[in-house]
Length: 257
Image (cartoon, rainbow, N blue to C red; front, top):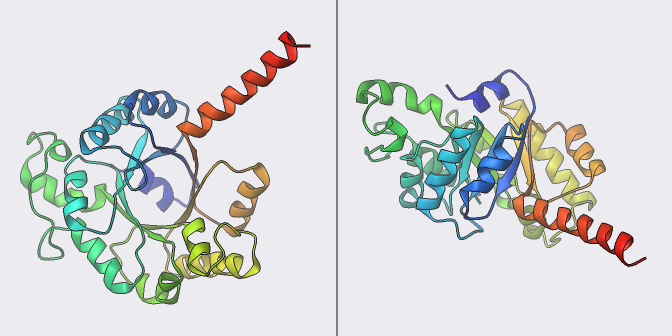
């Protein structure tokens, strides 16, 4: 059972945050707070394969869904993460129909794809019979691609015809960069791209989300009003920094007055 996938299929909103540090204790702590999912990032961090597995175990211990962003759209990079049994994989920078097909086929066994057979934790180390694992795995792991380049937007109407993609994530920063406006997320051209992406994906009957840093409530409301189904914000580093700042301000206010 994939609780995150089922939640999205019911039309409910899914709320998540990012895991960027190596220590799985942060996953255990944050995962116990009520998020629908944790996004374990191996694209922009030093998280190793061994540490990914520890993060997944920590997430499971507190009953929170865990999805892993792989480093790139490369079947060799995707395969070992699939074998660990995450609730989903996020493939970054998918910019065309052909690249989207490559991402999907990396996650599927032949004849539909070219994933090699060798699950470990994903089959609970062989305690799930092979026939049962193969029968259920395609529904149990979400295949999520990121739309974060203008080329992907231009080819999105073809990309959304691929049934095996379960959800899409907008990457606002890289998307804005691809039109020469890095970080200008309120620029009319960039906002129009956000709206176009969401409209196209929803027209295909699929959920779409966004990944961003720590943002104020009004920015969260903007994404809500655009109609995103998943929202992934901030990370444990943001939580540490923000709380540390608040504490230091309190200490200075009380002790140094």
